[in-house]
Image (cartoon, rainbow, N blue to C red; front, side, top):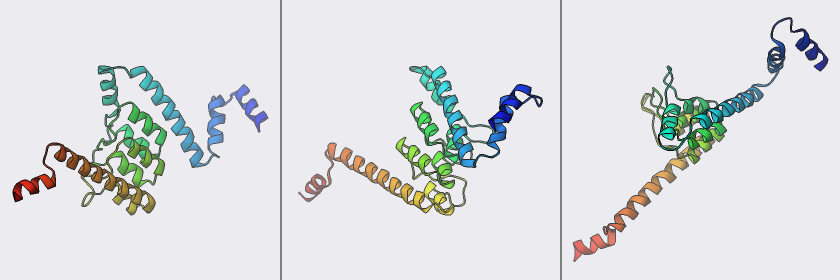
Length: 197
């Protein structure tokens, strides 16, 4: 109980003090609770880092470049937080200018990681930040899109969401290309009239 915790804090025979009490309680916490605590700590640390390093112009460019650095395992911060399902941190990284389509050493993106591990909220945060759902990784056998990995991992709902997002992005790109073509005077009807006339 709390009386035992207070005695442990005041005597501190084991040298752990408050840290020992916290870690002792964490041993009995669910992995979901630990995950939320970890995500909160990462989010807080990232906000502090961004606050110290953000600025206008070159400062913002340096911040974005530092956020897009790969570690010795070939992973960037965006990959790590996506694999852990930290949607709030994904949003912070996006707002700080991090590349949402940064490739890891094996060609995977943050969407690949979030989809593989079934993190629906992280997938949504990445898509809202402009991540491209149709990108295939370069190393996987036959290369895989995030939707392919979601299916392989038993996350059919996420796979359907990603497939729909990829379709919407593709259709939007076609529509933009057609609009540009029309504005340049090359619409299908005009071209047919010129060729037919």
